[in-house]
Length: 141
Image: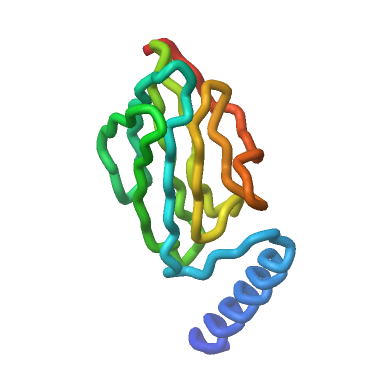
């Protein structure tokens, strides 16, 4: 079999597999789609939130959010749906970490709006911020 036919068969199988997997997903972001992320400080008692977000390709640096203030950024979804942005959050003399966007879980599509609270970040879905998640790690600052 020629290399071209072999490659064509592999591409067809890969495409079919991807379409089957996508059919099982609740949400789907097309490659190249711009994803907007907004993180709002909703900590109690007027606490300042320090944050630092990064992906394999981008380090967005340190940011300080006063109470009720937001930080936002956007990016284009990768062709292979591998984009992962992890953010570190510091408050109450503790460092907290969370995957604010993970294409593998597709928890949000195009607009990922989060409120950060003491118990973890809450994703805006169905008209409110009730989809709250636990921190993936907490350490002493």
